[in-house]
Length: 381
Length: 137
Image (cartoon, rainbow over all chains, first blue to last red; front, side, top):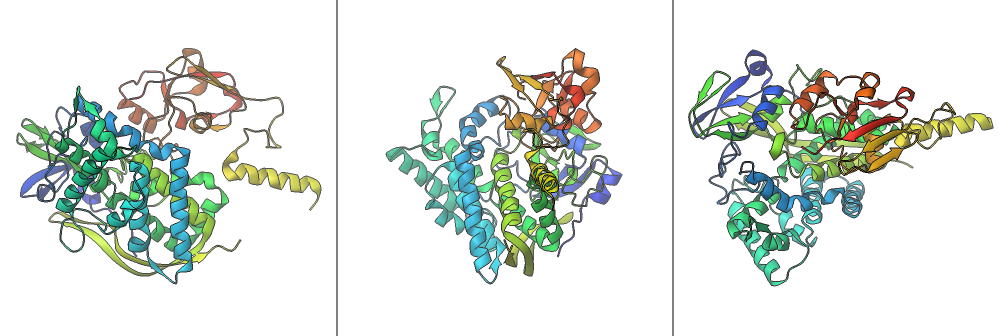
């Protein structure tokens, strides 16, 4: 079982940045919380107007479209974001929340009936896939295909990106929605206007791309790491059970510590000094969310799970204008998961694990599981 | 167990379950103190909440006060529970703590009288408090 090691701990203690190498480029990774927040708010110096290059490493080999609204800057960013925001607020609606809770209950009941399950393949992937149908307001049947895309659409274990297939699928969904418009995400984008014109197919595909890719591995890994945590700490489930009002702060602590997304990039339009490192024009910097979330200047005992941590000003959902559109969805799912585990499960036994480790030349970081075979024991009523 | 013990156990369980004391179920509550808080929304609507208790963001979210989302559940990470405290209440409400100040410093609508309601616990001393909901960032 993993501990909660922080690969940036030593570097962050010595210097505000750690220079990493990605795609053959030297990239200063901003490590401390205040510096990360400051950079995230400064879209003039640190721009997102960089198609395919905002994620680090870049995604130029796995997609062809700019992601909207992630890869545009203010002020047009706000206009782009406003178009899809109603869908990303859907998890706040009681009927949508009830569907998410129903889905979690159903998956957990199956897990309790089975001898053991792979919590990645049999729980977290279907959880993410079916919950996304509620967000996008499409038929649950669509999730049957999405489940087959695995943990990460762009870089799943078989080494083959599903990116091109996903783009083709999304184009078909937009075409089908044009034939039979409904209240779904694809129909809404077909009808949406940006600055007095309809969106282009490239823009619509860019929205769909991030809707499918952005919230996939992040939700899957967070869910499995929460399950693994409760397996190791059954007393924490008792503690939640004693007072379910503790779920919200506990969720935030899991988001802080288990953030699957190590960092995200920004591009400097002109030559820029980043904490002593000179970034050339069009060069990148990294906003290292995972390091900022362990900053000991802000978080007491940052490598420890403190389920009642408050305040907990983490940046697991980013910061500033580009803060995660799917944060409401992620919170609804993880709060629902913790609630269901506390109500239905007395004990979780981990039988087998294969960790998923991000390996870069300058660091390795455990981000989740490829396999998490678990046995759930029902809570006696 | 005698009847009075049963009553206290039930009340404790109710409070522990997170339902709080806002509905008068806490036998330890002082009978004459009913702290009230009023939120003035951006649209100028006044939302009066009687028997306010506990963390103010939870009070506001439960009453669905427009403009108080409290997305992070009170962790002080999102600043979606931002309010302005009137001058006459500043002493009693108190200044923002260091983490809160830092979070607020990035908010474009931050003012010297800004507070995040997730960092304010309602007390009897704050009975009658009026807060102006800040614009969304």
